[in-house]
Length: 139
Image (tube, rainbow, N blue to C red; front, side, top):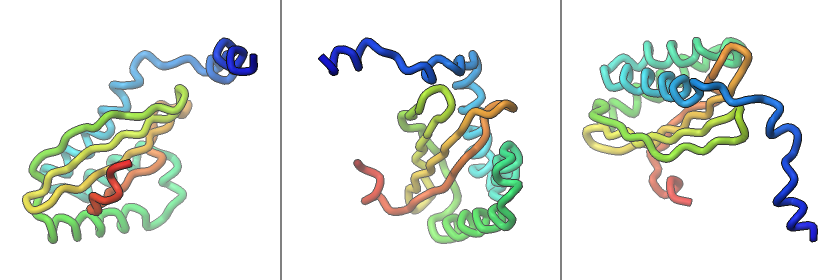
């Protein structure tokens, strides 16, 4: 009986915030712009543009420099970015999206993870980072 009730009852919060018509385009645009700038060899510019879209990152001094340092180290070790491909996204309600991308360097593949959250100003980056450890990519 409880199972049937759970399947037919929609929590009020699920419909409290309507989906924006341009959600997929806004989310993809931010990440695609970051990756294409990274592929062009402009890691600092890519990070600055991505962080500038989020008020959250204004409160984290040094975050940009730290990420640029990690990107520079990866490019030095694995070579420049050659290509990238999007993996399936995961949504959480209407306010959060997680995207993964595989990024092909000349000598290695890294996996990038982006968490985007919907704010009053539109979509912002809540988290982003990359891993070069394939054992953690499969779950």
